[in-house]
Image 1: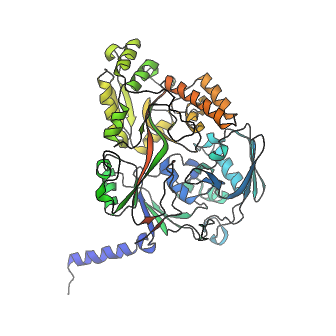
Image 2: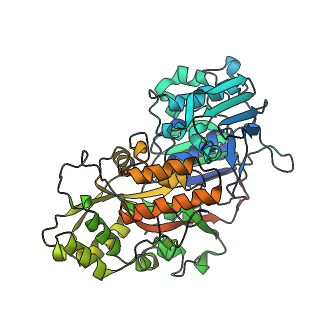
Amino acid sequence: MKKPANYILLIFLLFVSCSDNTIKYPNVFRYNESKGIATLDPAFAKSQVLIWPVNQLFNGLVQMDKKLTIKPCIAKSWEISEKGKLYTFYLRDDVRFHKNAKIFPNGKGRTVTAQDFEYSLNRIINPKTGSPGAWIFNQVATNGIVAINDTTLQIKLKNPFPAFLGLLTMPYCSVIPKEAIDYYKQDFRNHPVGTGPFRFKFWKEGEKLILTRNPNYFEKDTNGTRLPYLDAISITFINDKQSEFLEFLKGNIDFISGLSPANKDELITRSGQLNPKYKDRVKMISQPYLNTEYLGFLLDTNKISDKNSPILNKKVRQAINYGFDREKMMKYLRNNIGTPATNGFIPQGMPSFSDKTKGYTYKPGKTRELLKEAGFPNGDGLSSIQLTTTSDYLDLCEYIQQELSQFGIEININVSTGATFREMVANSKLEFFRGSWIADYPDAENYMALFYSKNFSPGGPNYTHYDNNYFDKLYQKAMNETIDSLRYQLYRQMDQIIINDAVVVPLYYDEVVRFVHNNVKGFESNPMNLLNLKYVSKTH
């Protein structure tokens, strides 16, 4: 008897689904990365998009817990010399690289040694690598990373750098085997070999990335159970936020991070609370986030074709800062998730944040006054300014565009894709751009480094090419100050200089907001919005 066509289709779909990774690995955590993933090489883990998967695949000498306290990782202990320039790390001897038949004898991952860290960290420094993280080793002495023996590593600095231990928690400082780079070369980006709780399984770019449990992972929980608990992580790449949200509601994605126009009004109330109708299905996790959202100006005349560009005029930049209402923006566009950035560039949550730093609030009279002083009364004669953003922040930029138009400040908005946008910002190709800076470590040096003249991009975070000798002197003084309270005073002085010069337009200090299904256990948040899945499990 001939089977009907719809019966044959059903059998085919069942066959396909049974061959899927979610059947082979039933305890799978699923999330979506709408911006896409360009590489899994930790040397290039510059943005949160890349840090999240890299954090599952690799480990470094040290790590941060959910309270941002620095804890042992592959280094079980360390010593810092009295002068703060010599760090000695003592490594565990039970950490192994992931299995890989192409690079290790019999495919078994070998034991990690101090020599591996010497190689890995020097690879970041090597200009041939082209790592955007090379700048974090600016204070390391020449040939200052040395393996004393298999389990002892020393790092010597040129000068004391109080935030250095925090720097080493960054994914750039992950350990990798030299054999993998020798074999895969540039293709290491899609054949990662690390030591992390999960190992690489499958990646079809733009569609799906699968990481599976590392059965030989060295860390255990407080009960002595080997981590991680999950069988696998499945990452999809749906670039439409509305589609992503619908997949979350259907249960095909386990969590979503942050708010977008696609889900903001549906998931949370105007006061910033979870919509009551989802309480039986979803948990909302929120806390202050070490992230400042801002608009940045490129101030390098060598990079700007129009030497009369209005963004080179400080009074015009100040006028823009005074020309829109941040509180109204947060209420109507962000449902009060986050805090209006009316102080400095350093976000709330940082120990050195100060509400005494005098920032910008909405002052329409001041905007008009500054435009007149700049020679553009009511915006007359002021050429248009192009602001480049990604689609995620289009609503904020359109709001600012509308607010500034009442003063005769014409903003043209250009929407770019994530990867292209990040490349243009990193290489100082945009004169006015939407930016965000997530702390790499909980010290405000990380924020001040964006304006230090020796950190010009590419290779450094000074995307604005701001160059101020006095600011640089304060920065250098802060790096030699080991007393936290005195160093914080210097940070606040530097922050006020940035605000006075209107190098950026601070928008808001962000808040970590995560929505996760109730069947997900052990899922936590932290002020840096790191994704740590080694303690996560699921019930069915």
